[in-house]
Length: 109
Image (cartoon, rainbow, N blue to C red; front, top):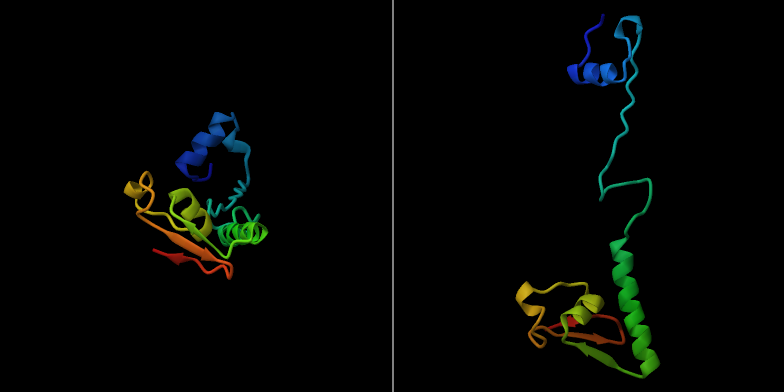
């Protein structure tokens, strides 16, 4: 019998495969790039999400006839600027501000 890896031996013996009659063992390893680096599918395109959120906010401002939008709640700031504040700013509106003019360039305070 050939020398094989002990873990492979346990795997094959678990399925009652007789190792004495096997000439060749072919092992196929499928490589995984994990959650963040994959070519198989796009998954989450964060830059597109950021741009879409800002674009939708500017569209709604135009529909409402606004020239700018001043956000001081953490959820709105995160939506239009894609930034996250410190945990202690989440329940206290007014500690951070984000100004979104019609040109779409966010100004943070």
